Length: 228
Length: 228
DNA sequence: TTCATAGTTCGATCATAACCGAACCATAAT
DNA sequence: ATTATGGTTCGGTTATGATCGAACTATGAA
Image (cartoon, rainbow over all chains, first blue to last red; front, side):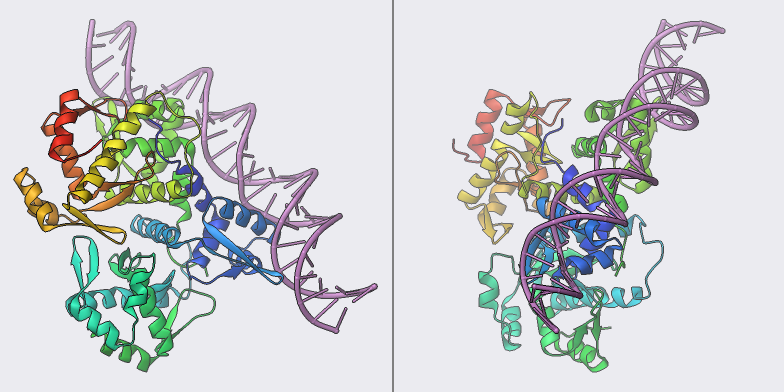
């Protein structure tokens, strides 16, 4: 047999604890420096440098030099999608971390998944968009509807620009904590940006947590007609 | 950070060459014995036994005893999906295998990709379905059209049942040999079953090769209006 | 210039785990 | 019963690669 692309290399890269921690940190969508990633992974800078070189070589992360800092980020959203998929399978098989972090409940409530919203609120947003008819599912694919176009444009989204992107507008992403779908793609990313712009929520600096204010969450729920 | 499910274990399991080969072999959907998997992986039976125990423990494969044989298969289609995803990223990043096998030409012509047709014929089938207007591409997604529905139903496909499946109807799958798209999803699987039922081709027992008869291939090309 | 910070490269150490030989258990055929 | 086949367990070997200390380069600040 032995045909097909060689998955060993990619899986091996992800399968090291230090590198896996770095990749999870990069799932925040933020570009991080080598030093920051070293802290995340709990290894020295030398070790980190070696790991990052391997991941750049393997096509998982991209680097960008800025002054005397070197910023690293996930190469593209296919890599992000793969990682979330891995998390989903891992969660399903019960491979949770030995010690759950203090932020675990917050993460399950609302977190960043690369560049869009995930967690309880993310899945609820998705359901609401389907229920109000702004999006519709065709098989496992999701598309925007006529009323959806009006809705988003009335709320200041520039769909034209989103449509012209190389990336797809709507994409389903499996949520590891909820085991349900949330919305990825340029529209998903755009909604998260909208949330920040409206100051409904802001990001936690050292985690994937998206922290809504009380009023922000209420406004968010109201605009997108999300039910409890 | 260090929150969320632990992806290390799963990735580590996949990231070993012997285990990756076994998992790829199991992507054929068939249940295989430990001995068969040992041959696939090119390691002794003892080593294989150890690998399989780890993968069962890790939730990637399931075993079933039958007489003095023990059959192994992928645990569920989430695992298959994850592997597909990994292959797609690997192919995209150019991680192909070093040595090509003896059946390589046949594999490149027509082979099974989990449960659907891949290779030269697979990609040509896909192009033909687009060209005849039975499927249409919307960004990175593919959908069936009105004429497509008629076409498949006239040819005995039960689209209703396919639509109701949890899996998606049409899905693009990147072909490693052709570097082009072929059709996956329930429709893709259904077409492959159709090919077997019409006896246009049959599977090679020890590989993913799909071997068309001369007349079978001609009939296949004619029905789907595939051009050379 | 001098110093400090960010990151890389090199070499040595060390732990993990893949591997196989050999012995073992389980099922089936003779 | 005896033999053959399929699979597991155990122990020892070996290779890979993660790790860090130390020395190095590069950029920026004083």
